[in-house]
Length: 270
Image (cartoon, rainbow, N blue to C red; front, side, top):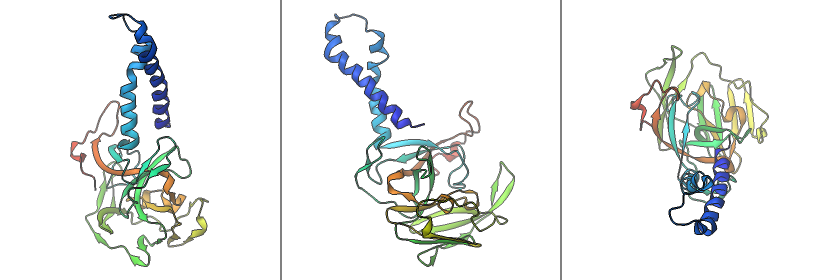
């Protein structure tokens, strides 16, 4: 569902009603005359809708994490906020950039429109920048010939499925974060799609090597063996960027009825 488009249409419709009422119909009504329903339930919502549309389009947008691909950084049921202007100002609905501010950096957790289906939003960590040579071989990440440092941590228990994953502290540039690897998971990528730029990648028994095209980014999930990411569906073009995730504001395993509420998750973003 394209919520931005729905809000835009509501803004236009309620805006027309609001202008028509202010410019014409309000003057025809006498003082103290009851407003008609189309004003009460149409035009009167315009100021609220346009504020929500503006905040959501240019400042922050809320998202709910639907999958476990970013465990342990983000859990299923986390509600996060995404900064919409960190990487530049984009026109809502069209998503075309009108003002460049910052470029994505290695280690950023970024929301973007899934290249194979732009109506779907994905969230992963930025690993490769334009021009980078990325290798993920035998579950070790190398960028431009330099192996990304990792330090072993205590194993991670997946409570919902009662099994352990190896947990490591990975350093990407100035960002340190935890990643997971399953000891019994295969290293290769058997289900890679035929994505644009696939000729920039070489797949083998140990994993994949890619050179990131200009204007694109290579994304990985922190739950490395349980994430469909750039290894599978390719590179993320700049035009698909939505924003930078920066804050967990709520956590609940389900919305209706709310259960499994974990207030300790609030603000625990890294």
